[in-house]
Image (cartoon, rainbow, N blue to C red; front, side):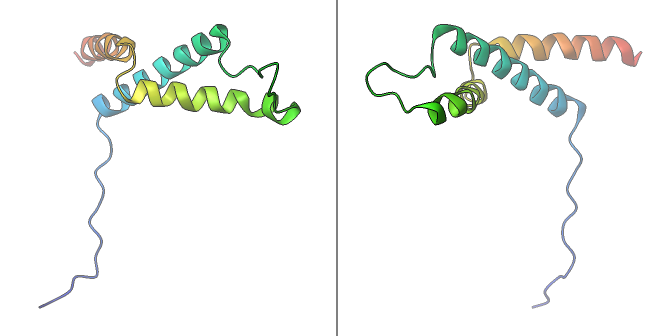
Length: 93
């Protein structure tokens, strides 16, 4: 049995993969703003964590928004992706 010492080369992401990632990030940014507007992440009156909680709540909201978008979100990323693909296909010719 011979063991190879070369590592397999990673394929660079395709245009569609790059656009899909950008669409998910855009949806996550939109969801983060909507979650902030809804009051998610605000310190509660009775069990507030003080200044530390206030400072880091935005990170929690951003992470939750990214998790929502990555798991399918509200469908905005698919619409954005399709729109970007149409624009990309139009520019290729």
